[in-house]
Image (cartoon, rainbow, N blue to C red; front, side, top):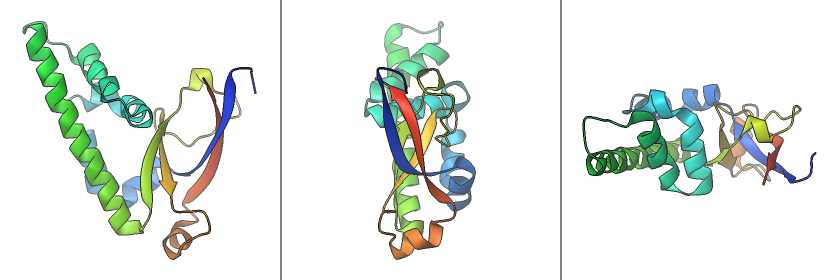
Length: 155
């Protein structure tokens, strides 16, 4: 591990397995305005850094409408970001209702990681799960699809 890097680990569910548990909520996010431009990468950064500005900046950077003034674009980014907040809340709530586990997020930047990393991310967004240690009945039920991963991050 290089200088400036630190080890990270969490129980992680892969995107495909998550989508099997909460397909409607994943589809709602991926069908939202500007998703194709911002993707899971910026969603992961926003949520892991707890900074909605990351999402709003990504929307502005990727979807700026030159036919409107700055205030219009800022308002659009804020409005769309609020929709993503609602979608993520619905995703977490539905995941918890169906599994008894808590879904949270981290982000992974391949350039700052290590060649041996395998955080099981989706475009830089890591779907982490709490409630797996000392396996609860819910954790026991999902132990084959939710696995603990380790990776490095620069910071």
